[in-house]
Length: 197
Image 1 (spheres, rainbow, N blue to C red):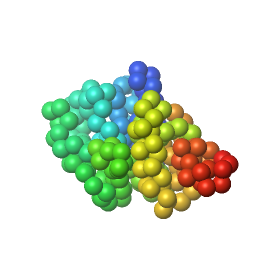
Image 2 (spheres, one colour):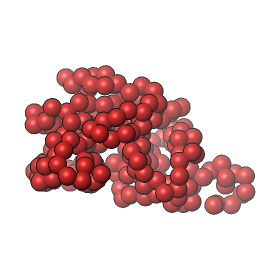
Image 3 (tube, one colour):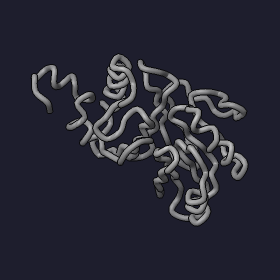
């Protein structure tokens, strides 16, 4: 398995292409556009996009989907059965599935929202816009951030420290780093001890 990070200069967000070591079917997570560098990355690795995974069906993703669907016969996986003119597979509850030869788990960000998903693929944790290095939902109101933090605490509790966090915004991290340095994720421990972890 190979993973490639593509940062969109226009939206300043990351999308991720995951495919085999050689030519074959691949998937993309949270694309906002299919620009020339991203298309070259896919084609130079002799990949064919079979699936698009969306952590949150944001308006910014629609343009990217339109272009991808013109070039590739890719199935869309999100929390909604339709995104604009695109139908796809709706993931409304925690479920495991096989996509493009990869085993993944789609996890809704409840109790905050069942329409926002995170994805686990092998040792990779795709957190979308809700969790980035040291931050949780930076631009959300305080009450929503508390719900999102609680959702993440429940989701990551059984996961190993070695999981790599790949957000839509910002640099990669690890669950070990987030548990130690993300104060909103370790708020329960701080409350019990009176000190940061």
